[in-house]
Length: 176
Image (cartoon, rainbow, N blue to C red; front, side):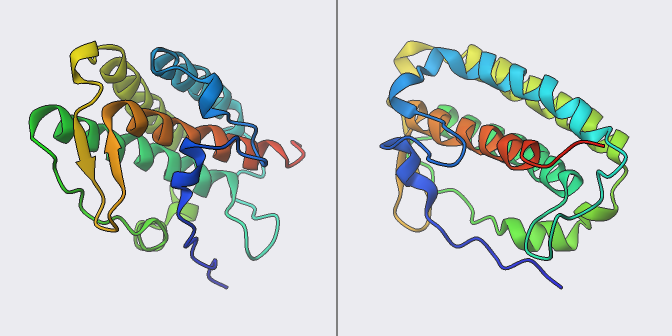
């Protein structure tokens, strides 16, 4: 059975603490983003090595492998968006259907070791890129097609919530 697509507008996490994972944008500085990403990367490695990595806890929830593949792709997508914002004036981001990508790329059938390696590489790349953003670029803007406007600073906070939240999602499951 396919997963019900997530249609929430998660931009509210820029203004409010997430009641599920605890991410608090008010307590998170832009300078912390590389460190948060690297901590997150380290925590994903044992998750993706679990014997039950392919198992969904129920029909409506991704497996840890599917979440790991999604986070890898989030790292890649937001690296692209960050570079667009740094290189262009007020770019419009392409739409990304995460559920379609998960289905078309067969997240649940990918090799866990490959996903772990790709997630580590993509995460380290975006952590490095955020670490190198000059202060003078923090107010550069970019837009989603739904009208949401981000600065480099708010894009970073919005972005980093995603891997934090998904690590929380898979950490609620007991490890074998």
